[in-house]
Every structure is written in structure tokens, then in C-alpha cells.
Amino acid sequence: MEYNDSNVKVVQHLIHFYNVTKTYDNGVKALSDITLRIRKGEFVFLVGPSGAGKSTLMKMIYREELPTRGQVMFNGRNVVRLRSREIPLLRRKIGMVFQDFRLLPQKTVAENVSFALEVTGASRKYIRKAVPLVLQRVGMLEKANCYPAQISGGEQQRVGIARAIVNNPVLILADEPTGNLDPDTAKEIMELFNVINRNGTTIIMATHARDIVDDMKRRVVKISGGRIVSDEESGVYSFAN
Amino acid sequence: MRISTILYCIREALVSILRNGWMTVASISIVAVSLVILGGSVLLVMNTGYLTQRLESKVEISVFLEEELAAADVKEIGEKIKSTAGVAEVKFIPKEKALQEMKKSLGSRAQVLEDLEKNPLPDAYRVKAEDANQVPALAGSFEQLDGVEMVRYGKGVVEKLLSVTQWLRVASWTLMGILGVSALFLISTSIRMSVFARRREISIMKLLGATNWYIRAPFLMEGLIMGLAGALLAVAVVYLGYIALVDKIKVSLPFINLVPGEEVFTVVPGALLGLGILIGIFGSLISIHRFLSDKKA
Ligand SMILES: Nc1ncnc2c1ncn2[C@@H]1O[C@H](COP(=O)(O)OP(=O)(O)OP(=O)(O)O)[C@@H](O)[C@H]1O
Ligand SMILES: [Mg+2]
Image 1 (cartoon, each protein chain N blue to C red):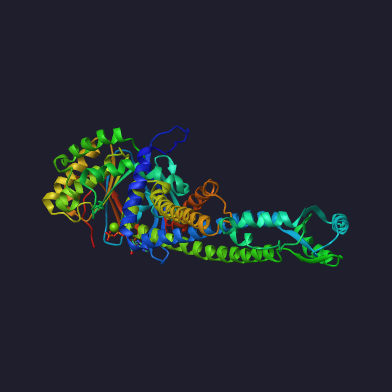
Image 2: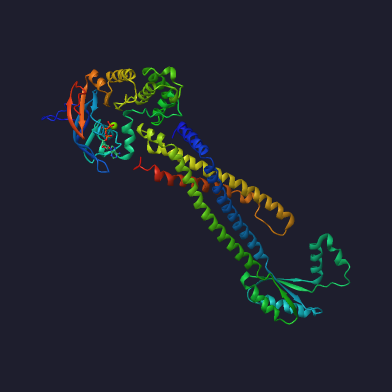
């Protein structure tokens, strides 16, 4: 939250990094003095060369890693100060999508999605209602009973997205979600993210896909060597490296 | 905890238990073996307590008198015995009664006694001491009395029984301790294998916002089921074994009284099951603590 001179609440930021520095145990400085604000409902691309610190920045938000210095606010809470038993509650507000999909191979499409609800203790009744709805949204209802090995990469990522949104998260963190997909499939997946974002969900996406970033004309935060080198509304990928 | 969560834990635990195969068999067996030994040792303790109590109450001193004593002398010896400090009860057994008793205890083989011309048994006093420890001293003093032929008592029986069972008790508790620790070790090793087999699933669960206890519960359940299975096996072995033993002894050694089966099995199964479950849970807590602690979470 921010206050102006008269202490009136002006803007609600969903995410606020205050001078965040992250040095890993092996001495690698992955982030240096990052300050970043993201409003509710934004769609933000994180771009930058390999090893720039994009994944590390996202890990700060879902408390996979703690900053070495600085604070990270998410949804009005200081993530750094959360007690370990509060971390699961933080993560239920965040949907995560990965380059390698991270589906469980021994579970069907529907089971992979309902798993996300089961671990939060949702009722059977609610799960039975919510899972087909969300599979419908990502266009995977017909393949609900297939196993991940039986569907294509693009379809697996749709399931990954269904699993990420089934909890109605306020934020989606997508780390190179199209990295393993061909350009056409990638476009379809991006369209899905677009729809989700239009429904009000904030999205942060790390990507190396230049054409996607350039097409979407969204906010682009460029990181290099652990520092933010540019931050533009409706920016483009163009990265001199 | 809701039913579906418990069912989920049981299902996941069974999957792991089946996947671990021989490791599961080894874990369950060693829990069973250590609990059988514990159960056996508890039965031993219960039975020696029971037996020594009965034996102690039976330890009496028989004072046999010389033959052809005058009735007055017999009476005088009786008075002297009665007035000795530490004597609880004195009973006169005339030789006729001793012969009758002998006939009774021989049963169908009593025929041999019929052929005797003359009663070979002496008159005797049977003396009960106030305290089993005083028996040897009392016996010694009766031997000094005039008119006493000889003195007999169950020398050392009680002491021997107690020292042998004491030794057995220590040995079986030691063995049980060693096996119990091995059982813990094997269970925690099985659980560690299960955790490693599921590490991908666990990392995904964490990202999806599963609580630590939701992630740990199936592993606790797995330990619990293995401990319970071992304990059930142990209860079956101890129960069937004891029933068979009691039956056998009733036939071949009828003068030994064992604690009846029904009495033993009011407490022993509950104790073994409880202990088995504790070993299982504790074994899995060791691995959970090492591989699924908050810091590694
Ligand atoms: N767990 C870790 N331990 C030590 N160093 C790490 C760890 N994770 C990342 N790093 C290092 O931190 C730096 C930033 O890594 P990060 O994964 O955030 O980069 P990235 O921008 O996501 O790269 P990419 O585009 O290749 O995914 C790299 O130098 C990396 O080697
Ligand atoms: Mg990365």
C-alpha cells in the first residue's frame, strides 16, 4: 500500500519489491537492489538473457527463496516475514506455470487438476464441480481422462494452466511457459493467458520469446545481471545482448 | 481431519508400502519379531510371578519322627515346634494319614502299596513358616530336636526359579531393545525410500500450497500401518503359541499352573498393538524430520 502526503491510500500494489538483493549460498549474486511495483490486473513480461535472475525474482514472490536483503510485499503481506506454516496459504493465492509443465505422470488430466484442490482441503463436491469447468476453459474437457504421456506438449501446458487457475489465484507466475512449444502452439497458449488476464488475474511471465512479447504490447521489465535495466508500458523485447 | 483426507493418506501409504516390496516385508517382520519377544517376556514375567507365589505358599517343612515314639514324646515335639519363633502353622500327620495321601496321589497305581505288610511311613509334623526366608534356619533347629528322624523342605526351588527367570527377563529385554532399535531403523529407511520415490510429487504439492502436515501425513500413515501389521502378526504368534503351550503343559506337566490364556490376553494384545503403532510412527517421524522438515520444505 502507498500513502500520499495526506496519508490517504492511493494505489493498491499487488507486488512490491523494496531494494531486493539475492545472493545464493554459492556466492552468485542473482538479484541486486531490485525495486519493482506491480498493480493488480497487470500483465508483465520479464525478459533478459539466461542467468539474468528472472526465475529468482519469481521465487522471491512465492517464497521458494528468501531475499538476502530487502523486502517483498505481496497482497498486503510481507512475504519475507511469513512463518513457515503461512507459506502454503500464500501459494494458494498464486498459480504457477512452468516450462516443463510439472504434471504428475501417474495421474490423469482431471486428477492432476483436482490434485491442486485436494491439497488445499477443498470438498469433494466442490472439486467435482470446479474441475470440469476449468478444463472446459482451457479446452481440455474431452481429454480429461488421458494421462500426460498421451497428450501433446501444448495440451499438457493447457492442463498446467488449468491446474494453476483452478484455485482462483490473484496472481499467475509463468516461467517460460511456451519454452517447450512450437510457435503456433505458443500463440494459442498466450491467447489463453490473455483471456485469464482479462478476467482480472495478474500475470507475470518470464520468457525468451521475442515475437510473443512484441505482439502482446504489454509491460516489459528487462533484467540483466540481476538488475532492472528497463521497465516500459507496452514495451518490446529488443534486447541488446 | 476429514474422511477423504484420511482415505487419501491410507491410499498413498498403501501405494508406497507395495512399491517398497522387500523393504516393507523386512520392516514388518522385525517389528513382529521384536514384539513377539516382548510379548514372550511379559508372559514369562506374569507366569513366574504366578508360579513363585504358589510355590512360596507351598514351601513347608516336613519334620519326620523316629519310629515307636511314645505319644507323650510326639506331643512334646509338637509343642516345641509350635513355640519356635517364626513358625506360622503346625499340623500333625499321623502315618496312617500319610499313607492315605500317598495312595490318593498315586491314583490307579496305588496297588503297589496294598502289597506292603506294614506302613513304611513315619509320623510327621508339617510346619509352615511365617516367611519363606526363615525356612532353612527353622529346618536346622528342628533337626536338633530329640526324636526327630529327619527334616525335609523344598530347598532352593524358589530361589533357583527366581534367578533363572530374572536372567531370562534381562536377556529378553535386551534382545527386545536391540530389535526395537533395528525396527525403528528399518521403518525409517522404508519411509525414506518412499519420500525419495515421491520427491517430484512432493515438490509439486508444495508449489500447489499443500501444508507440511498434509504432505507428511501419508508417510506417518505408512509407518503406522507397518507398525500395526507387525504388531498384529506378533499378537497372533504370541496368542497361538501361548494357547498351545498351556494345552501342552496341562497334559504333560499338570502340577505346573500357568496363568490362564483369557487372563493374559486382556492386556497383552493392546500393549503390543500400541507399541507397534508407536514404533511405526516414531520410525517415520525420524525420516520426516530428516527429509521433510520445515527448512527443507
Ligand atoms: N539454487 C541456486 N543456487 C545457486 N545459484 C543459483 C540458484 N538458482 C539460480 N542460481 C544462479 O542465479 C543466477 C540467476 O538464475 P535465474 O535462474 O534466476 O536466471 P534466469 O534469468 O531465470 O535464467 P534463464 O533464462 O536461463 O531461466 C544464475 O547465475 C544462476 O546460476
Ligand atoms: Mg529461469
